[in-house]
Image (cartoon, rainbow, N blue to C red; front, side, top):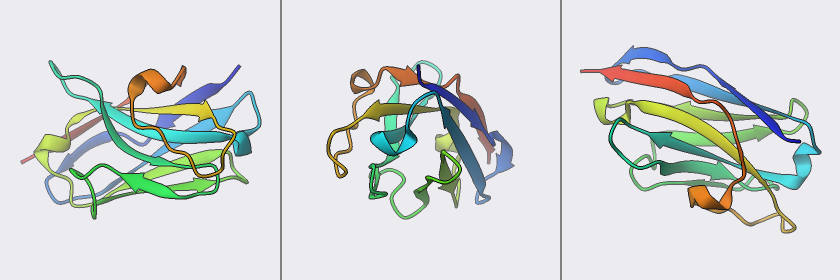
Length: 126
């Protein structure tokens, strides 16, 4: 079965950067698209960014131009580079994976993903 492990969260000040990592194991990584979601206290889990099997990235409008997702197939890892962080980015960040027949497909709904990591806390102070 697929296992996902996030790392890289922490406490930073507004305007600073963090890079999250999601390490994938258990299946053939090249067959999976990977997405990042986040959940703030009292709010629904929301899509942040994702990368397709062929590396094509997609970001939510709320983070476009600040966050970037990159996959490293040699390391079975997906990175979320987060720049110009804002207090409203504070949340628990989760990575999720889904096997896709197409190299290009990316899905943005939490219910589309069956495999999840345990989450990593990102806190941005003002």
